[in-house]
Image (cartoon, rainbow, N blue to C red; front, side, top):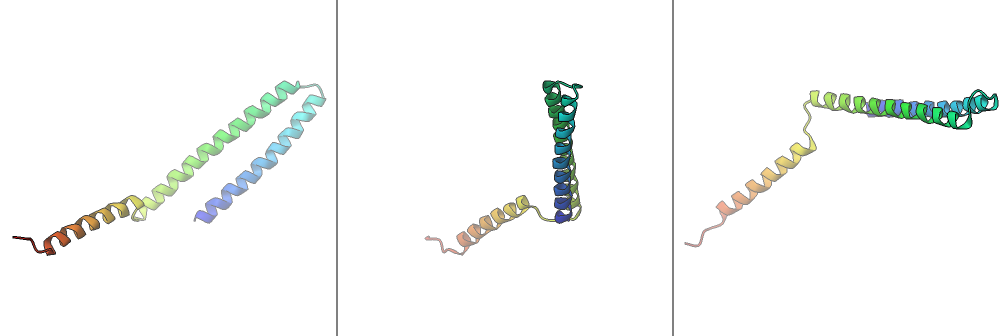
Length: 105
């Protein structure tokens, strides 16, 4: 499952890189044709890239939430659960040691 998500994200990243190159070329063309100033083209490119980053951030959050929900549905033990159990075992081991050690009466 993780590999599928990873491949999807890498594919998305590839698309973003291709899109950025195309946007750069399109903006350069608009500047050459006098339809946009260099400043306007840079601002528009930055706005588009920021919008894309925001979109990918939102996608990442949704994927993380979906993965966590899916893992929760599998009823798996979490790292936090394991740490609690380890602490409880250590506490019980100490208690057993105390009970097995003869007291000096």
